[in-house]
Length: 274
Image 1: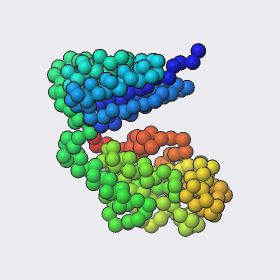
Image 2 (image 1 turned 180 degrees about the vertical axis):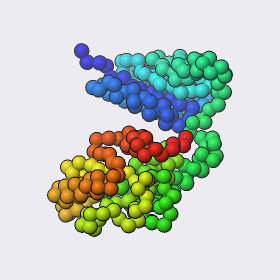
Image 3 (image 1 turned 60 degrees about the horizontal axis):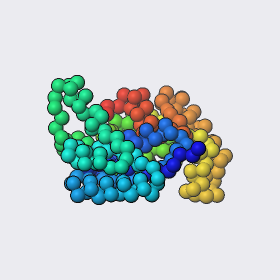
Image 4 (image 1 turned 120 degrees about the horizontal axis):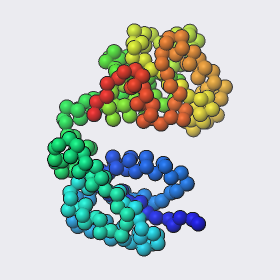
């Protein structure tokens, strides 16, 4: 018997980004089940919670099934009010805060929005600087100052270097640059001059030729650059350079940016900042 469709609500008194990521992870465990997701951020007053209750109750009637609600409301009064909904409510703070407070022997503060506010100004500034660094040193656009990088990603064009660098900068304040390998590098069989002397900071990304071909076809359809034969040559030559120069590398074909970033930091010993 088919399960009734139901609505999943993600409710937060701030952006809901952290909770949305958690819910997305949890829902991967229910492969064939999908539901409409509604994200309701910045619900920080009784009036806003009451409006959300009306929306949740309306969804219950329309779906013929109780919605599932995930909440990260900090205010205890608002959390109590939300529990009046005709829904199954999973409250993140009710689940963890009492036990965590007991475990460490410190009462929780009840502060709202610290996880995504500026909070520690120094840490925020480090993240901004790291993002600017990633943008300035994207795709080999600049050489001077490359020695300030915590990490230099190397690989063929369109293998995922730029998004990985930006994720590392935004999430962990890692000063990450990226440098493309070109036909000239493969012809001479050696690393580009600007990368020499930075061996301990180099990390390679590779990708399957088929996947690279599909990505490049979207960018420059029908070009030699996007041809499967060209993609095969470049990937093979890049991996040869990695091996001959003892550069650790990962295959980005079926790995998320998040997973790539964590493994790169672990392998190369880059310090994380939070």
